[in-house]
Length: 583
Image 1 (cartoon, rainbow, N blue to C red):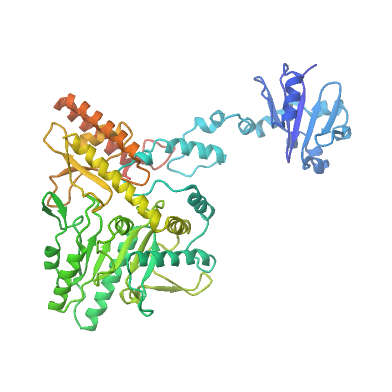
Image 2 (image 1 turned 180 degrees about the horizontal axis):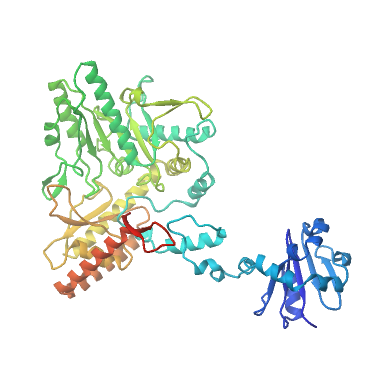
């Protein structure tokens, strides 16, 4: 007659006053479906019975905390029904007069004030809440909480503006893993790998990975007193630093034993860092020149198995042979470290006859990225030493405050165990046969892409083929045009493809090129779609005049600069005080 009052109780009883016009059919359907509230017309109010009837909620606490209580009240009948048993509990509210006396204007006003946010709790969508109308906190910790679904949705909406990892042809980092691997990672996210005492099986899985990778790199394992050693890292950057520290410490100990100075150590690096020579349009390290630079202060030479510029494998075997002669002639003991971040999980399967690893006596340490062609998500790398002789004990920290005596050689103390577990999954899941199939497929796809680009007559290919280098295609414009490789990269980005354009290393900065990294999820079909979009971009650039291209280039440069600048507000209340900082 005059509207109904419905209460659905869990731990706190909410009384929903339905506006006149709600039919009994709607009410019955709502009760049957067990919804928390019903769709009502504007004017529907939500109240908390704990603030309106504090004496009732305390008196009948056992009923309020029961499973589910539905209260249906109208002007002619006051009835409390337990949904499970349809039991009438009329004494819970007494008679109607007591009920109407309880809801005074003052109590309703107080309820309005205390329950002002109730509407948002029962909103049908996140975008109906007040949080959708407020800016998400960016610089300061907010004072109030936010519902988890709102926080998740708003952050997810922002992340949607990121590039698509599947179309990111710039990165070597894995963008696909099987569902089972992802499940293992999710189930072990809470494990801190450094807690050896608490998570001994995770440590055991690391040991198994080190054994597998050491054998993959042909470490000599015939002497039980000179077994290979290794450690997991967060990536090849950490692994390289650990390897260089080991080379430096070993050189220092040798120099001190000889009574010589340790003040001026030097490290000879590969083509991508300081030494780059141009030979037959290829940019590779020339071992003869590298060995000429060796002196008594050289702690080691770093060779690269897979240049990030063009994917070339540097000639580690020739470097080893020349360095053996140099060490013998000058009484040196200069070792080789191989940066196999990208090529370490490729060459053994598609170019097994290539000698670059521990088969060469002067190769004392190798780093490899598990999150590149090791087929794991970003966050895992490996440093492997030929034997304990080349990892000085002075660099190993021994601790016992985590529950047991344990040795540690790492730059990042705490780290998740999930990536190590994922690496072990990939190794045992694929085996040699699986890795060979995948690496062969992506090598063939890279060769197919190179052929398609050559057939256009517009590009010169700078990378190797047939598995002689990394599965990537480095290319540049064959002839001069009124646009360059950077213009092509910007234009094809409009189709979602992320293709890096860059200049070569020192002594070859005038060379511009583009590079496509072929990963496991870059299929033959996707390859052909990319070439089609690339040709469309070239067609459009051909039609633009020089002025238009320069304007586009300037706009792109301004946008890049803008993305690298963020505003840090000293106070959110006084927005006139700002400071520009570089991300």
